[in-house]
Length: 173
Image (cartoon, one colour):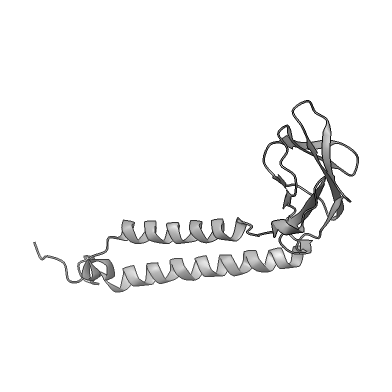
């Protein structure tokens, strides 16, 4: 009934809400930061993690500037394992466990020789959300869904005529 009066189909309404929800998730997961290029010295890389001091989700994006490396960049973790090799001056890592994690960035030329290195490893701290918070968020979401479905069912039932079981305001034919 509501959708007929307003001229919006139920499917269009659902599509709109799905787009709003997807857009909000994407905007929450997109880190944004800028760095002043004047901070860099020749031969050294200015490295910084994007975002907050403590990462709750277990993922982090690290960006650097200071040296244009024709051979690309290499990122190693605290154990010396190569975790990134590429030409982009940023690195994304996910699946980090709770604790401190350190990453060293190195710029190399086309022959693989080191042309610059970060002065010290960039350190990030991961502390995942507590389980109680996760259950609270799940319970809140479940409550919203149950109330939403209940309102839809209630609205559907109140538009039915008791005698014929047809919708009110519909054609008699």
